[in-house]
Length: 213
Image 1: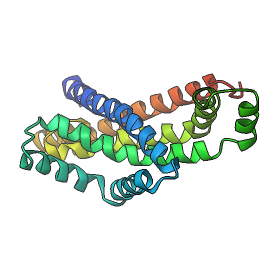
Image 2: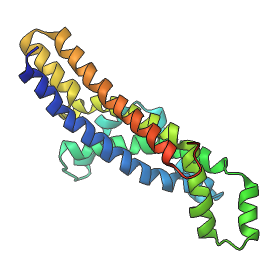
Image 3: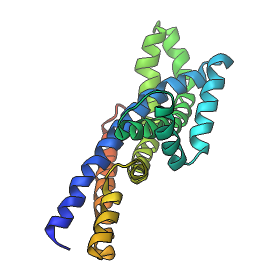
Image 4: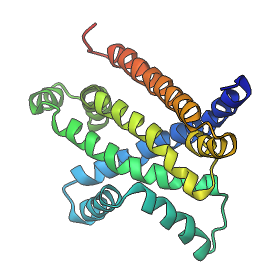
């Protein structure tokens, strides 16, 4: 395969990485709110959060993307397809990240929280200095795995017209009649990206406060 064809795949990877990074970041912010609602103990907040998580974990991402892409214009929101793709990816990953975070917060030893209360820590200090660091350390590997899953799942955004790695590979394979070379190169690019994320995740995990060095 020529360098020019390979460079087109690399250029398309910018869309894959960009959509994935923005979706993961937005999903994390949504997940914090969802996990807080799940742990609130109030049905008013917990029930909607449970429905949200059940829906986005139970419906295939491909269906979610098509639904959001067609629903937004129907309700009068004519946004670019890239925005619809990011919304769909963010909502989907938020559901998975919220479950990871909930498990992390529930695993924080109650003895530590009681000790902090006895030491005079405020609720905000307990949350920021005890709950968040411990929960993040416990859930960090799962969050990295979720980031890798989103990176690979980003190939589905081609259904709404985004030219990312997989869509570019399909277009090149059909025009050059070199499917093995093209898709092998696409697989190599995905592998390198996911390997880099896993490596960064291991470094980030070791850098967290209290992590084993």
